Image (tube, rainbow, N blue to C red; front, side, top):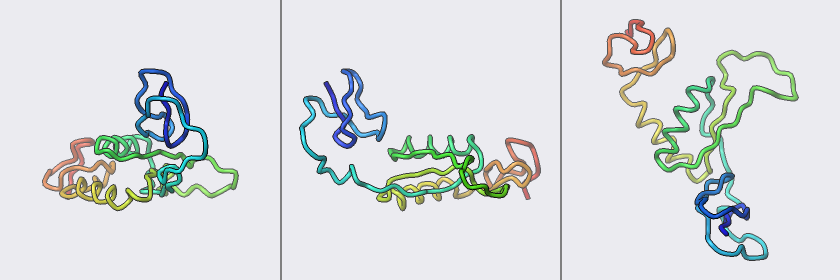
Length: 139
């Protein structure tokens, strides 16, 4: 039997990663008593807000492929009525507070040398004359 040392959930044989927090599972019997790991209490912070699911999935894929724990939180529904804010992001990408600076540095590095298309918002190389996604002129 395996268990997550952070969430303290037990898993069947063959599973190697916690489905809740992403921590590596430990083989054996889960010890009794409180969790003393600092990782169990680590706070998470909003890395960025985005407006589309497609953009969020691209960013999550980039972060995960570079070893970052991350979570997508949808903010489209609320108990408090708010006006339609149009371009304000309704999806939030969260990472552990200890990873915020490093994750932002990665995103800035990836964005370097790119520019958003004025027609569709797709990030294209700033050296390209036209957007590879919609064909609009980039100038």
